[in-house]
Image 1 (cartoon, one colour):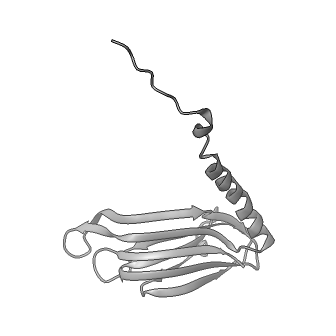
Image 2 (cartoon, rainbow, N blue to C red):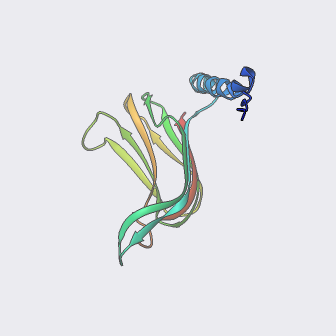
Image 3 (cartoon, rainbow, N blue to C red):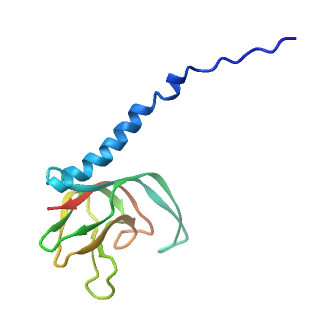
Length: 163
């Protein structure tokens, strides 16, 4: 009985994905440079399509979520006084609300955050003036707050950055 040799792929084939990796590294360098130059005002992107799964009557208890979710870019960044943080969205909301929040990190109490709950479908833009230079976090999520029913069901795409 002879043992068959298993042919190995040539070494060049092992590095075929190098082009993709180079493109990702290039994008990671070009994106911040474009933002700093003012050519590309967006720092981050999020999209979601799905719904929550709840049990019980009334408000119920959310036990899970279904659907797809993706987020790219930076959620926290230094913004300067005089800038406007811009959150652009396009949403199809069947239940619940698209929760948008800008939080001034390392700051507590009144005025440390502002939020917007979008309950109607369509495209829009939410602008938050930056009154104090600082480190801010942009939060985008699905919520049952202010919605009709015990859970949420929506599809959205959101871009954020500054002008």
